[in-house]
Length: 373
Image 1 (spheres, rainbow, N blue to C red):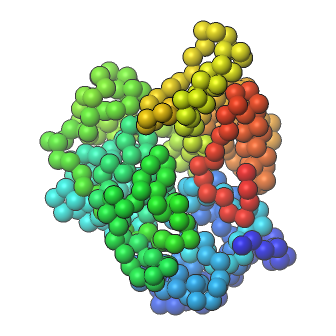
Image 2: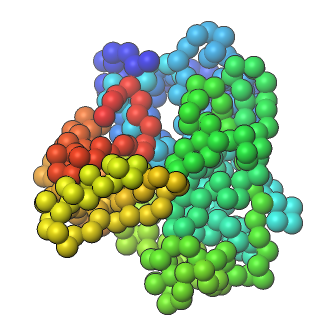
Image 3: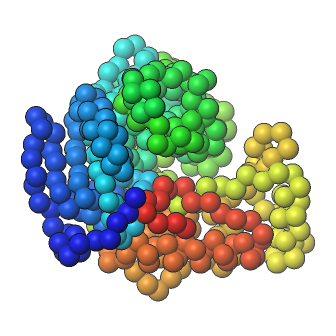
């Protein structure tokens, strides 16, 4: 997918090519500005589509020509190689926010955190604890985005997508999306589906939030898990918690030049978790207990942040242009002049260190393009 850079690409030149209606098309276009990491080389061709029809036309054109295609929404979950992308990068910038009673429909290009704010203003619960998450609405079902006790799979009713295999627009009900922890059918088949629209069913709880499921949020609010609080209070509290961890984008703060959580929380079998606990006791002492959360029959989820910290990679770790955030061990950051290879070197160091210490292999959450961890 990724070809060698030309000299003009190395200089990051962006040369207009032509305009197809409202579709903007550029050649040798830098992709770093479209990502929250602000990393990655240029694309041979960058197309920006603002309607579903334009998205479908661009995808079909690439497929008919056999051209590699990279889909970009909010760029919050992408690690693009320094050589860039040898093909067509399609920036999905569609707009559409429709609220009918408690039913919300979002175009894939809608800014997610803005959409959450509007649902809270409308007095509807179900996604208020997902405030501040960067990226676009179209990415939420792909990753089954979740935080602070909520996941989009709990409120998504259906996803409209373009199926590149059948060359048709399809609508998948929630049960057909195969949602699981940070995973979905769309993530399992990345070359097949292009998300166009997402529909949610929210709750009118008289201005109150959904029952709080996350202990940290409940503690911050001084309530018990399962309680409800005013919607605006829940959203503002989550934003404050996220900001304290460098998880709210701020162009002036390099601690936020990241993809949020770089690693997913490991899910281990009961046997793997027992072996892991033994390693913890050997390294940290018999009284040390690693975090453990139910993850389905015969499985336990533990904390990637805890693993990273206890393996010696503390907040602010690193001396180069890519470092662990000073606010949260799960965020790997670009301090302003990093390259993708700088970031990957840090990520590999963390993965190797955690595995050596505890026998657990961390898995990256962001999608890698033209590179491998």
